[in-house]
Length: 163
Image (cartoon, rainbow, N blue to C red; front, side, top):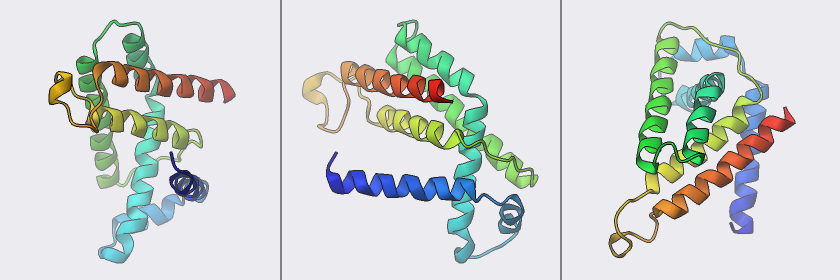
């Protein structure tokens, strides 16, 4: 990662942490009832905080899925399918909660966990089981995918130990 990209990522992470620490449930409810572009950015930020928190709440399911993959109980394709099912279902739950105007107070650990899940999601998007001559340069082979997921899994384990 280049130094500029690394600095941008750190600044984004600081901004997200600030947003999480200053999360205002009442303001979130107000924004759900507002219309217009000026409210969309803040509402999007609050929505991401909610999704990260919901993902944090089911972290045991994600950890079990990761463990099954690490132990080769499931292959890459099935890992991706199950991961995306969980990820998509959380977005649906978040939409339902917002439509009913039920909001949760986010856990501070949800931000880092959400970042890890975003890394996994990025890996899933560029995974390819095509033979090497038919792969694009940005695609991950099965071996590269496994190595990437193992690295993220180790980061998650280290993060959870620090709690």
